[in-house]
Image (cartoon, rainbow, N blue to C red; front, side, top):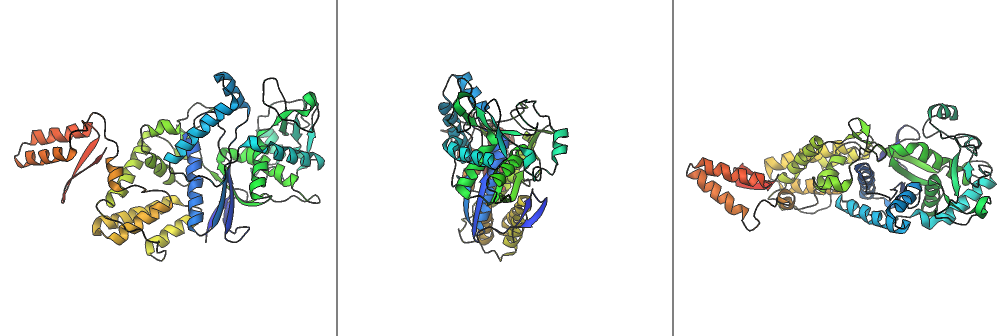
Length: 466
């Protein structure tokens, strides 16, 4: 029985979908003005894992992950680059897709772009104005009135008074309350804009605020109420808090709000030196920068070996450790022709794996099962056990390659590719038999410098990449 930690209720709850056998899931995606950093990578991997497990559990999943392709940062970056907003955003959408594919991410079922849903946003803003939850300021901006929504703060667990005291709010004399947030921004010179019915300067022309985007797109694709809403922990407030306020007020009936989401999920931060990785702090590593040094599956494993709600500490030491651990799993499968069969969930190890995943997607415990199986394979060379290891790993998108392909990988260019590695191994073995250990050691050293590690086993010498 799957249990999910619900940020809204602050406890684990048994997952019961709105429609039996089906899951509707929305995840806040990227704002595409730069390359994705590892924090974005964690969001993608975490909810890819969730999507995979829900499908493995027999659910029909409708997974929506949006793309924000219009906001202040995008406009600023396009102007700096002297390119159109469309050129900028498409370039970084393509880059995001490339990074995601390398990390083994299954494409979401729907990837809506904000600029395609402006009319949906206009309709929702109009409904909020009609119901008394929003107002047009004298500068043409439209604001949400947080005082008029009694449930504001329920996701973050803070009252409006706490939020006013604890949050640094930019002073805006056009707002009725400092906590009010913008739904529609009046047009400014040299910025993209759309027609609106809200009046004010430029006859109501403007563009949507950030928060309204997800409310409009999720409602369009998943309905007024859906099962799971996910995203990074940093989105809990104010973005997701504001989504709730917008959606539940806009869809209210006879003054009663319509619950937007049943289960709110938030993954933890990626941290560097005890600080959250973010572009604003300038301490981020892009996914593609990390992938220049580490295999993409190593990065995926590094993310999954931590529980999705816990902080993830980035360092070369931790990634090196992840690489060594994943190598142990692949080494266990070496030389065994696994059989791709349907998983027997009654098998004791499969039962443990399922129990871990059903306990709020506890991937650290699930990874422990994989290593238990790998240890058994190393002892018994059992095809059945190796096949189960491969199949369970496949559930979370790991062990996707032939062991030799992972273990050999790309060898450093210093090694002359016309020289057969196996020939060097033979030469080393002959040198050892002749007690010419200096030659044998030099061959091992030369190969190691080129990224090839030798391992002497009872069955002979094998090699893998460093």
